[in-house]
Length: 126
Image (cartoon, rainbow, N blue to C red; front, side, top):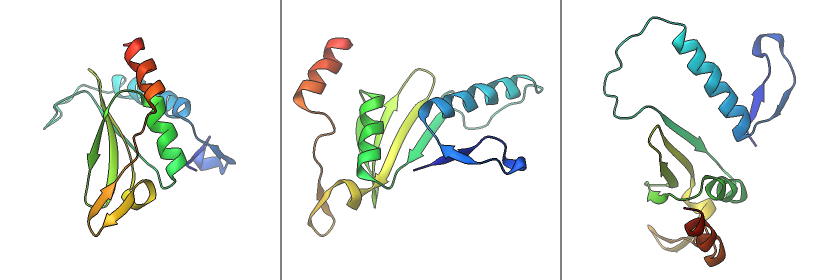
């Protein structure tokens, strides 16, 4: 499980991090950037890119389900779930062998991230 440190310089005890902790840090980062002089950013096609790497299937799937509608992407050794929003590209990834079954060398089969019921709920909420 990932961790955050309340005050890195004080050696404060670490605690389990959540998406809410990360959101708080992003708001603080935005405030900090707003406090600095404006500068150009090269090669910028959207407002933000955010990625989370998981090494346990259950944690990866919990993040996928929390993010909702998105798409699967496959890298050489990883699987990603990507959500495109108007303000950011959010992805969660995991080693492919942790989430999928090897069918034959270099060919994997992945279970759906959502059950039929969960898909119906997502489609109904959209």
